[in-house]
Image (cartoon, rainbow, N blue to C red; front, side, top):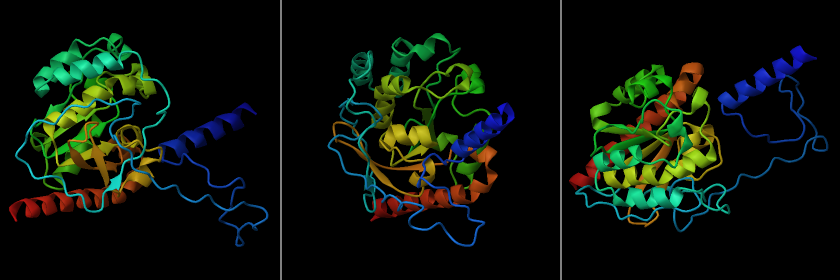
Length: 303
């Protein structure tokens, strides 16, 4: 019995890693059987839900900072084909303790250097107590492309830089395949300290760091915002779908003040691609779409 349980748990963990996190029927369908289950045996599949626009789109929190974006001589993101982001998850909950302070501090930052110093002095996220270093971000403060991952890992915690381990090296190659590198982009995470044991950050930890993440978006004013992995996509896009369903789509990310719109999409996290190399084919397709959208923005700016 114990061995069977371990086998089932291992299979469920593999399903979650592959993005299979939602059931579509009460009765399993053995696709090796010729005939599908009858209508009586299996209920009809639920219809997909369509995202509805919200007045204030932003990060995965119930309240969101409203800070005007700094003036930037940059063409606006192309809005054609953008879906509105969904409502933030758990929007009915009260904002976490410390979020008001985080929003006030984030509002005071007028540059990424100031924001990094402010985050370093912020004690509202419990991850700071167990991490070795603050992992703020890396790259170009005037980047056209901003990438947001989930959380720092062990190597990132040691060096104080995001995406420097094996997944970071793969990310560098992914960017290089479409003519980008770190000096051309900016990379950060939904939280700025490593969770103990490399666990996933909690909803509270993401929410209390969200004002700083949104301020990064406002200060850089990128043309494209790319969420790396499901947790980052859920936090930024307010979606509850897996990254496998969000990838390949474009969303209109707005800051709370509504003063900025950024074209946003989701990519498989490089760590997931290392575990599931068969998904690199889809990731390559998404990278080409990003390259195409950047080229279209350049053409539009030149007209």
